[in-house]
Image (tube, rainbow, N blue to C red; front, side, top):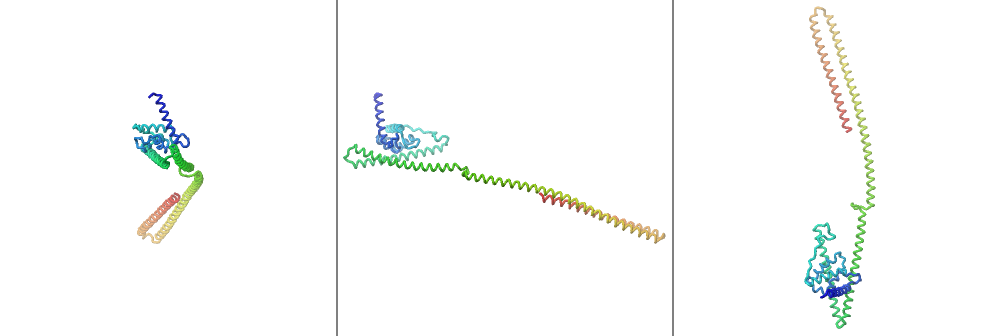
Length: 350
């Protein structure tokens, strides 16, 4: 076969494929609904020739050629799928490449990528199963129309089959359109909720709630400042009272100490005066005794006088000792009073 002949055959084959493709392009958009894929392959005579089970083959094709998952195929995309079907029918299987770094999966861990790939395969398989269901429905419709139209012109029969096929496809397209509209409304509602949520802070508060919180925070800060100032004033007043109390305590202690000393001095002077008076009286009494007894009793008087003097001396010593003991007792009492007053001052103002 010459190169020119090969080109002509290829062009005729593409023209035939394009004709079948356009039959399934209901809205003249240059694309076909992927759900109609099995029907198209069936019309092209490839479906029954596949070596791979048809649902498995179609699942793989959906994964490969509907990468954006928009549910449609352009003619250029379909040509790649068509060539894969021709190869499969001829027993030629091209091993599918596994994309280790999917465009949407860069930076994801292996587990996440595997889960994403499994989900993609599951969705593709559901679409393939739906395409097989539609193919069977078209096949049943075709057989039903043929059974009801025996003896009719084959062209008219084919036209009726095509008409009903298109009507069924249009109903499915309308249902999909309604479903897309419903999903669009749901997505818009979701986006509106998300936009509203984006106006909230990380704590889940709206701008209005944040303003209220800010105002409350300012009031709280103002109250805290007033409390701080009041506490500072209170502490200053307390310190003033403490100092005044300490000064008053020192003054009070000095007056009490002076009073105690004065009292002790007066008592000591009084005792000394009393003792002096008593000794003077004793001496006068002694002189009178000496003058009345005469020289005959001088020796005896000398002894009595000496004894009397010793007795008076002992009494004077005892009186002085008693006075010293009283002075020391007063001094101790004064020291205890001073210590007690100081302790009270420290505890009351701490």
